[in-house]
Length: 284
Image 1 (cartoon, rainbow, N blue to C red):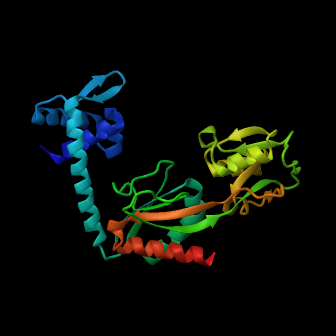
Image 2: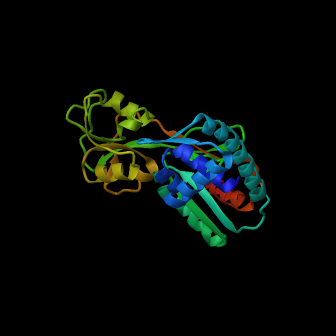
């Protein structure tokens, strides 16, 4: 039984289709199908039911899944242990953050880091998913709530303040009303975020003209005069077309946490990037 075939099996089990699994691990779909058939021949069982909606684990496949996941955990632990021994500032670092925080806050730090350590390649993933540190989907993660995993080393990095913005000369709506006011806000999937709830409470009668989960898109719409938007101050303050709209109570800010897997605590390039990031935020 080949471990590489088990990796393919895990990807199919998690993604549900050959195409999605192939994209996940960088293989072609025919190769995925061929290796899955080879694995099924090796174990002597059909591991998936092929349906019109995708691949569904059989009972035998579910049994293989439990063991394959434990094998994956041990393999990843070995990779992390070996990576954690690396003392040279060479190699790659995969960093995950929200889109706006990565673009507006982290890229200047990455630029400085690249000048100091040209042998390190930083890969920034601006993904709404919570990437797994245990599986090394990311080495360093910035996010707006603490980590639950006990094996993650974490710290609160900073607090980001938010403000309500509109183009210069925007009419200041009456707090508690907002009738006739137009809003630019998060999409409905993020309707529970503190700034969205704050807008609903402060301007309950305002109309929403634009929704997006992208803060830069919101900022651009607000700068074009589409409506008022709650934005992180690093974005809103940088746009000369926008000014703060004071309703007598600021929107709630958000804490930013940074974390990495404990097995990487001796990885020199991660330590160097983290130290530089902490230094920059301490200066701001």
